[in-house]
Image (cartoon, rainbow, N blue to C red; front, side, top):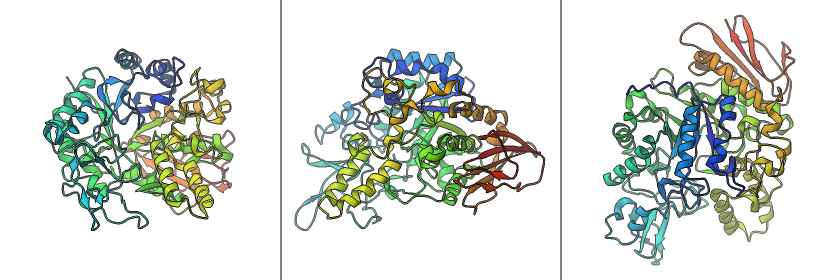
Length: 571
């Protein structure tokens, strides 16, 4: 078989989070037949590849990122036959499909973990990470170290049966696998990768791809947040001592034998470290997600310690994601939304200029270097949940755990109401829940997502923002995205493969950059007004300007209206 390593570079990838995408049977939960019913819509939008978030069998404590069986489908989503129909349906339309690969941890309901926790002498005991307790001077039992879970509290859970702790960097029901054990790695390769490649899946988005190798000394993490005991463990759990060895092994044993793509969720690392993951010569992964853009304004260890952002911060984050591959054989990704992030139009746009700022972000995304990822509902400008909603409407384990811990810590304070209001304001801006409300297909009950009551509440604005109302509206956000994707591919040497250079870094209102091709002297000139003011437009490079895309009909030569954006080709 000839391995073609280029198709994924020029592709547009659309992420589907199945629970909230499209329900076909009225039970209020999205499903695979619902996805199949929309394949023609996605093809018409300009999508080349679908990324399907976890559809595996799972107790759903973390919405499928807690897998109990890698080779079966969560029953509410459908059957193995439905999944095969989806794979085949994509291929029949000349689209490809990738799935989520969640192999840092399993569900505590996975057969492997049930065996592992059954006794200290079980053959699978060291398939997970077990440690003895430690004790303070008063004899109180403590976890093995001070590592903090990404979902609040300790990263360790005490197991009464065997009187030891297991590591769970995420939820209590998500025990970390012990990648130091070769048997574990081989079992993962067979059950989670080969099984699906042989069924026709075209690749994987690799969840928490930098976390498999832990520092085996398991030392205490440094104090980052002085007001709490448990601390972020990234120093000892991200980009660990054997992480590249593990990825090279996975590539050599499995992925290199198929014509597939891989994109790793790494999140945070240096340029040097990033290139080790995605340089083609390293033979690990094809590309990676870095969180510079989506986490602007947030603490890397705690998304709810949010301070807001300035345009210069945003520019620097975009620059980091575009430029780290320049002069190398590595590849990058372009994204501003996913299932773990707030809606981009609420986060980086402006509600007063909702449609216009949604189009502005489309212009930005379509012009950046790398493989473009779009998240469900982004193409119609879906927004964050209303700020008026109470905490009771939030379903995400990350949000719920954080809020509970907050109440435990501050609930008796005299000024708790003020503190809670401040936290709810932050939750309304950056919680993961905002990406997880049902897709708004039309203006009927429940936004056309389901005929039954959805598992989570539909955003109140579904009558204003939905697919059906935008399909035949030439000025809609949806049709603007269609055009953006066409322009991106028409000038792919500039937008997908070109070099990125900011021209107005210190400007606090506008974002101007150029894209240069390696093949000729032609340039793309992109100017975006991220403010509510009209700003002066002046051409910062010489040449003949041709306007190829804009989010306003009446372009005034010397001024940019609020949230106006333009793309020129300059010869």
